[in-house]
Length: 357
Image 1 (cartoon, rainbow, N blue to C red):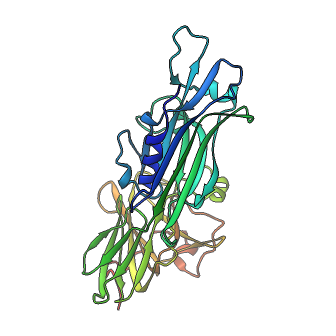
Image 2 (tube, rainbow, N blue to C red; image 1 turned 135 degrees about the vertical axis):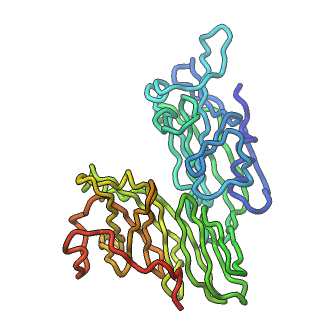
Image 3 (cartoon, rainbow, N blue to C red; image 1 turned 90 degrees about the horizontal axis):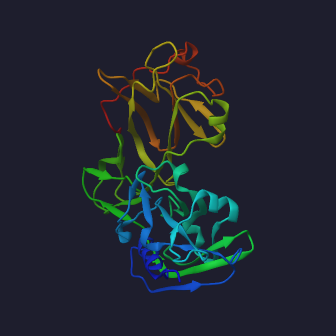
């Protein structure tokens, strides 16, 4: 009655793999109707992918990267109709039938961050059609893990009791994305990447994280650097400062230390960082463990430039978790600095040299 999910199984397996797909299975899983009139299932042909905030309705699954989210529409058929048709399930179906997507019988499930059932309208993604989706979010960072087999069973439950229509199983290998550094150049780091030097080159290198975020530093002949940027908000700061405008830059590589200080540069919209007094101001902080530290003039600076875009520069040899705020955060630990004693957050610093020997 419903379309089989072989296509989705193959798509998901290809998406997670940099190597070859070994097996894929898909089959209808019938029975368990809530009132013997409605049948629910997944529509793999209409699945969409969101990566870096951009929706792709016709993705190349072999090129999808960590952090990608797959939205699989949930469809419904009403047996009471004279000519029953598959249509998109609605938020009312979601609520009335307690629809839930989940994964069962998982092997290698650490590569999937979450599986949920959502209303497409509430996701606020440009171009997404209305309806209910199974939302599958891949982890942002699997770079330190060895290649691993993955088997997932995607199941749709109704009213927490019966399971309807379809299960998906696939088996594949997940491998790291690795880039070799062999000269003084700019290397794209928009997605989680393992960078390693070729055993010969050492010196300055620039990494481009996209959207005006770069790091210029120095690498060694045997260096290995895992670079992964997340913009996820810190929930505790959002609660403490609900009306403050803040931006978050979380470097999650775990092995992103360089032999000397480099320059992390972040372009910002000056209009968003205009404080209550009408001044363009950026307060720069670093989260270390559970503690928030203010960065003074020896570590951070802000140049508002002459146009709409300013630049924050952070001097560091270890990329961490940073918070930029348009207002001063009074819960932060401040250094013994006259700049912060006086409330200034945009002191000048040396930004001409990207790395120190």
